[in-house]
Image (cartoon, rainbow, N blue to C red):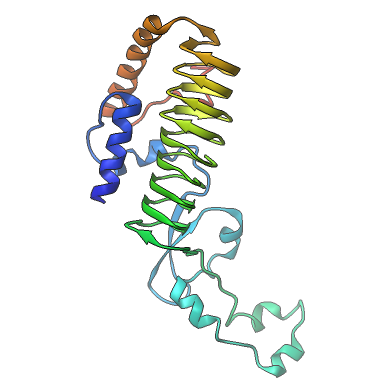
Length: 254
């Protein structure tokens, strides 16, 4: 957890201008508001062991028949008798298959170092309470990152992204906050459906902008002055409430 906590604070310092007080778990509710497939901790169907599973449709429908990884390997050696196979029908399938109908969400691939309470992942380094993490490191409270690092509270950030907080359905993001459906953007805040937008805020359906607010380029000096005001407000709210209410999905109404 030391490496995970340090990665979270390093990302906050880069994106929000300052580290946040407390630990990453203090911000769980805020980080996971829009994260799909959150990690769910359940009990194994055949033991008291904890199982970490994604809260997505397939596994939710398999409840309560989920087991730990090692337990699934043992169950896989069981088989129906030849007589039961001959009797199997749709009407009695539930009863006859009860001894083997289990699955595990603990899909672990490759070499993993220091990853905690994750489900469906690999190869990873120091990922935490995240699902479907592939080829990534320093990920927290996120869903389906790939080839990425230092992402927190992100969902479907599909690849090659880094040092971003609460971003969604995007690729190639760097130092972004509340950005969704975007590609190749950096140091941007509250942006939607943007491409090649850098050092900008509150931009929508835009391309090729730099130092812009509301799709209008205003220059570096004016932009940095307004950015400082925004970050001070975000940091203040998070420090006091562990929450910042405006997000990319409601900013127009806020």
